[in-house]
Length: 115
Length: 131
Image (cartoon, rainbow over all chains, first blue to last red; front, side, top):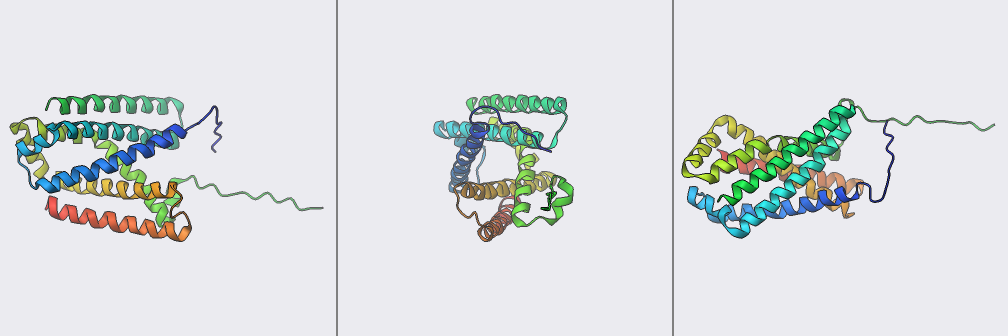
């Protein structure tokens, strides 16, 4: 049984919109980066590295990663809400998911800005 | 005396009892979820691989060795499918959000298109990049 009490304004709407906005960002980036790969052909290390060392590409790659992690948070959180009933387990999984995704955000920033 | 009929509506909450009788858009939807989970689970290994590929010539060599391993290629094939399915099914959902293709016939047709496009692209990319 689902007895959800909807409290307050715009319950869930923000996440619903963010899920779609991040999806659109990722879709455009994916097409863009695949086009770059296709244009450059098979790459050795220097060419491959120079793609992501490029300022605008670095910027958009980071935006893609942020979109990906926020998108993953909403998706995975929905999964825990759908399938994990005990509140203690669910809360633990929520926290672990947030910690992992926060760590990934720092990690991708470190990778990109070391280039 | 009027007959009071209380209809017990079926509640389809048991995942495993419904999974094998879903119409195509339902299969697409559950695969959207499954592929999303798969992509989430490989985020850390992918970040590690990306880091190796861009950090130094030595780490790039290491990345190439790992990526050339048959087991990695098999995993990549699965990931390429997961990404393309999630991508194509996601675009279909965005159109449905915009009220495009909402009726049953159109929704089933677009689901078939998603499977056709994502599986064809998966085969194409696996053939050109992995083999």
